[in-house]
Image (tube, rainbow over all chains, first blue to last red):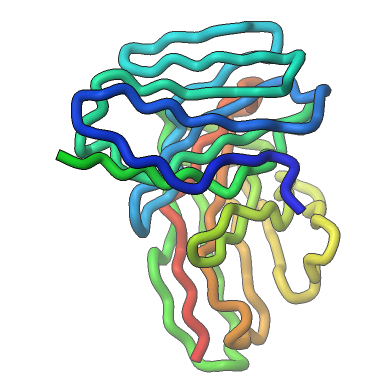
Length: 110
Length: 116
């Protein structure tokens, strides 16, 4: 089974904020990632956070990491229709292999 | 950001044929590349780690004689699906990180394989 868990669906109104949550199990994870996948395409690296950080902000994206609870979240401010996609949370150990969650399908409605 | 390409993007073949998929890092060198497989509406599953100049490392349950990996240069890894069967139909995606900066993995656009 998967060690990284995500909710499967999120529907958000255009202009609102989206929050996608993820839990992971391996406390040894050094990096945690958020990837975006549009239909029929590969994965686009959105952002990543080193495990000794609590927060990282990059334009409309804010990543929060609660290492104690092994909880990672991605907040997208001012969500746009182009943000509709599947978002994958992933963790990695020292060998840079990625373990992915099942993905959260984000649908942005007008 | 760095660019990783895959070729072909889509392939349809008859059962029993072999299919080769290329993964290239276009503007950086990668001593290690990873191959993933994704079934429809599912997550990515790591198949193997491709190591430049040495044998690939396969994940548990992945047949190395079925999925042949060659990493002959610092910018190219190939995955050959030997004697493909319909159950091998899937979306195959590679990733690569620049040597020394592998915490940032970039993914190729994927190759959709359909075996009839």
